[in-house]
Structure formats: structure tokens, C-alpha cells
Length: 206
Image 1 (tube, rainbow, N blue to C red):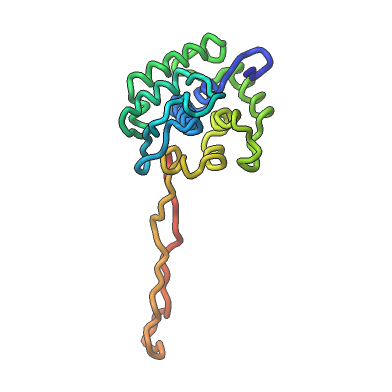
Image 2: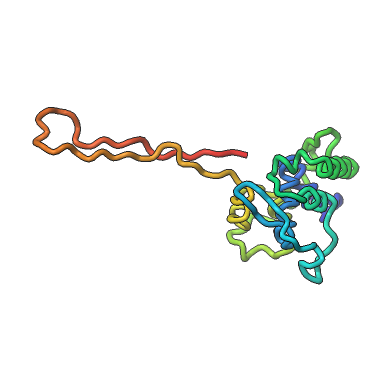
């Protein structure tokens, strides 16, 4: 796909330029999930489903190198940090960086978004705006939308899978509201009748 009319740039290059190696691997995981060859296991873990990419349907194309490396790394369940540390995945990422550099989108390692990369990303976002709902995204564009918009797209397009697989941060309640029953009596001893705790807060990050 051409980002600025002259540079060929696909979902994995887009993800790498937007969010680095983690974003690229996340895009690969989503593609594998859509093909039916990867699923969420225990919370924060991924595993293969037992299906091969060819079994996903007659229109399936061969896996891109990074997606193939991620699938190979899932010979046993793993989370994103383990996938990023896998030698095969690392080699595929290195090759992806070379492709980005050869396309003139970055001159540094790790890749840094230069002017050409920013122009390509802007053009792609203009051509593929973040949709309002899952039904507005053609199946073939899901990985590109995830590559372009990251967490926003994951929450919109594959929220349950992304949360269970550890692709999205979990929201945790760190301070539960607490209400104390008012003491019986006329309240002449002083003090307030009710006491409540602080509001719930949430956190979590990649």
C-alpha cells in the first residue's frame, strides 16, 4: 500500500514506525488471530489454536515473515514480552527495520519517524480514518487499522481478545469505595453519621 503516492508501506512497517517493535508484534498477533491460528490462553498469554494458516480459508495468503516468526515462537504459550525476546521474532523485526530503511522511511536504528514516514502515516490515516464501529472495517483492513491506531483500534475491533491476550492494559480498581453504617443513637457524642472512602481509580500501561 502506498502511503504518500510513491512509497510502498504495509501494516507491519506502519506499526513499526508508529509504535516500535511491540506495535509490530501486536499487529502480527492480530493477523494470526483473524486467521484463526492463534487464540488467547490464560490471561496475558497467547497460544496456537492447532489450525494452520492454510486452514483459515481458500483466500488466505502466506504469512508475512514477522507473523510466521510469532507463530513459530508460540510452540508453547507466551506473552508479548516473551515474543519480543524470542530470537526468531527478533530476526524478523531486524529484517523489517531493514525494509523500512531501504524504503527511505527511516535512517536510524531503531527506526525513527522521519519526514517521509510522517507523510506516509498521515496519508494512510486520511485514507483509513478510525471507524465508529467494527462493521465499518473490511476484514482485509483490520490489521492496517490496528497498525495505524494501536490501542484505540484494539478496543474497537477485537476488544475481548486483546484484553485476554495482554495486548491491552487491564483496568484495576485500586481503592474501593467504603461506606460505614451510621451509629445508632441521637448523635450527641459528635462525629459524622456516615464516612465514605475515596473514589475508585484505575491504572495500567503497556
